Image 1 (cartoon, rainbow, N blue to C red):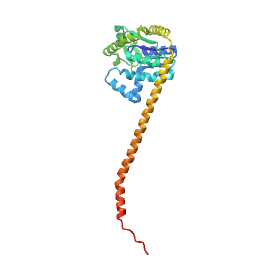
Image 2 (tube, rainbow, N blue to C red; image 1 turned 90 degrees about the vertical axis):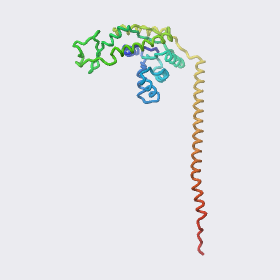
Image 3 (cartoon, rainbow, N blue to C red; image 1 turned 45 degrees about the vertical axis):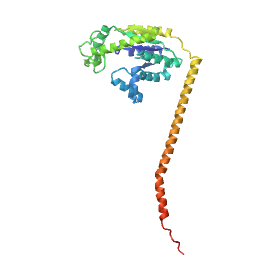
Image 4 (tube, rainbow, N blue to C red; image 1 turned 180 degrees about the vertical axis):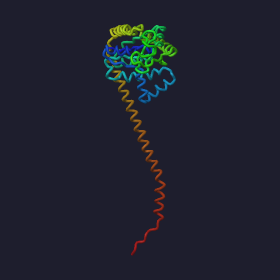
Length: 289
């Protein structure tokens, strides 16, 4: 059982490493980017708010990221552990996740952060070629195709994706580097940094060792009676607020109903008055002898 996060720059293979780590510990992967994407696709108000933020090409606001994480971390399949992939990325997100889990009597082991040498990572990413047909990936520096610009697997044509251009990768690396400092300050001894590289097996071994170190160091969190009381009190407070809202809504509905009835009566009054006058003015029929 482990609850931890794995962070790395885009294109570093962190999703694959996260899946391997999840298999090792028998826990699910919680990919933050997927949570955000799913929420946007759902068309919910939260999804619309996330979409607005993404249009400005700025990081999604911490509050919105935390909301989708809270929703996912409340589900039953993550009670015994999870691997968070791609988050938390700020001290506010880190603090939010810690506090959320603590309220549920669950601890968070910490974060494994994959650090790359800038030049090495640029070479790795800008050298990538992707097959248009089968999606196979090659690298002109480390694993070139047998025939230039032709896929070894299916013979399809290889191309360089827009995401693999130097300016795009450079921007992503700068964004990722800005994550390290606030997380290091927040997590301190709960943050493990591993060196990334071309050798996937070697990198995963380093990640596994770091994860195991965090797991062993993570204290068992027990919910104290005070925390239980606070949770109960918070739940009671929520119920009271919900009941009060319901009461106000009922009063408003009742008042609106009365207003509607009064309006109908007011509208009908002149008609009744006219009908009464007509009845009074109508000549009486003589009864035959």
